[in-house]
Image 1: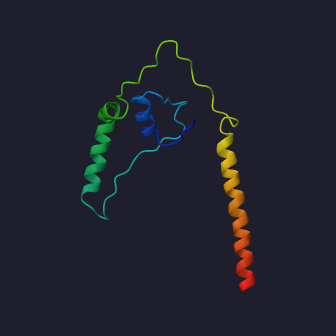
Image 2: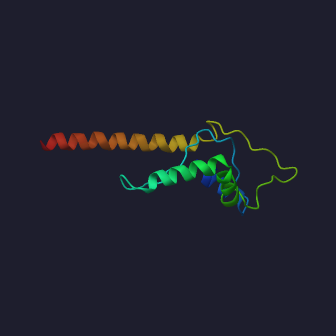
Image 3: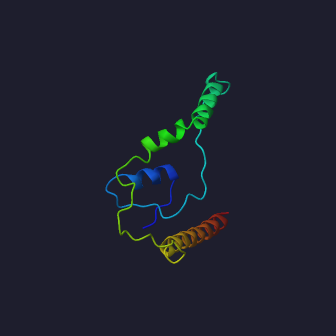
Length: 120
């Protein structure tokens, strides 16, 4: 099975028991997280500066290692085979399901349009 989701959650799941999940490839698009405050809040600058300080001195990375990737499944066991490459054929079921959903929604849109125009 392939599970495509946020990198922090994937790293957490892969590093904790039951050790049945692995990350197949490198992270291809990584975004930062934000903290929302009310407009013109006095805490915006305070939080921004503190987050920058944590990033600069390496504390942010140590927090991520401590809370996200500190599980017992970090090291690959000896003799474990590498994961196969994810290709279009391995995700064929996902694309089939998406295509079927698109087809059904298109049919329903046409039927809805015909019923609405017939009522008018």
